[in-house]
Length: 167
View 1 (cartoon, rainbow, N blue to C red):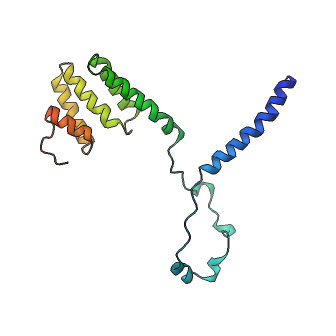
View 2 (view 1 turned 180 degrees about the horizontal axis):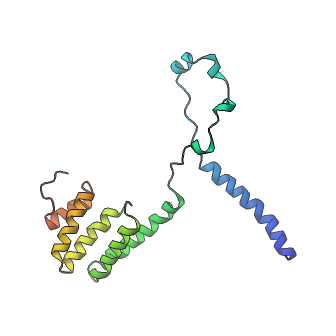
View 3 (view 1 turned 180 degrees about the vertical axis):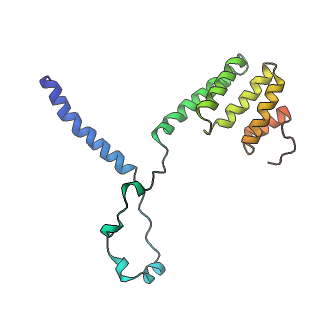
């Protein structure tokens, strides 16, 4: 290995290690809040020690999972929004392509924040393509799957799917 590469690695390795430590520490769960004075007064003297007993340290498998979204979910949100924007741009000019994008969005993010939007656009595009029976079936499925979504209300108004459902 050349001398410049060795120097570069000797600089980059500690920096990457530091970034890794910061990342791990930032993803830890916050410590539980202190007990109220009433609860603390009733606690035994044994429980008043600082730090856990050696036997009370949880195994790594028993540690709680982080509640923050996974990095892939953070990256997926802009991609999902971009696909939805493209889909809406093409709804009138090219309903076939918009239908493909709506189905692609449903396949990639079946429980994503824009899943009802993708399903509603699928319904609209099927009607625009002259496939009302297929559109009606997609509308029924969409309204059943996302009954409280504003997109479901729009699909109900346009297609008559579940006209008596109260929201």
